Length: 262
Image (cartoon, rainbow, N blue to C red; front, side, top):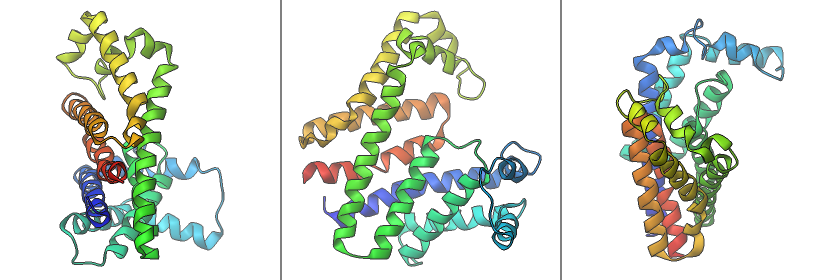
């Protein structure tokens, strides 16, 4: 896999996740309304910093409801352009995706997750690489994304490892029993089989902590780890309905494969 193909695949897969996230907001705009927890009045009150009056007015105009829907629409259009591959210069689309990801993150500290954070990191880095526009910047971008993937998985696994709830096996059953991330049929089954829940929890911990093994340079190890994590994300998609996790994390896989083959 050459650098150009790895970059295109990374951005296209990540773009699908951003498009899905943007479409979800546009189909349920009430999530961004002023009375919602992700509304701008809540986010504005949580800011630990102050802007100059002119800048504050400009940000307020952009992020207030319903104006923010224009930003989300531009984000959706830019993501689709990246997935399709032109008709707009890539650096423009990447700039829109990077800026909109940062602004939406600033708008509300609630409702975002690891997929949103990883997508923001990928597209900010991609915009910087595209703005520089050299072959070396593409290589740096791919290695950065691969390293970011290793950090994201390992930190997630280590956080579970030091958690008594995860080590005891209670975490998985507890998550699947919630209204937000749970599953009506699977939750009670997992809760009724604590031994299986313990094994499944430790399997997730081990897999996430072992993810940096992809950088050993052995393609067989890399493909095995990526296959197992892909299966994990497919399970999360099916049972927890986290639509963007699959796309955000698998967007890093072309970069991981590229670095492995180098």
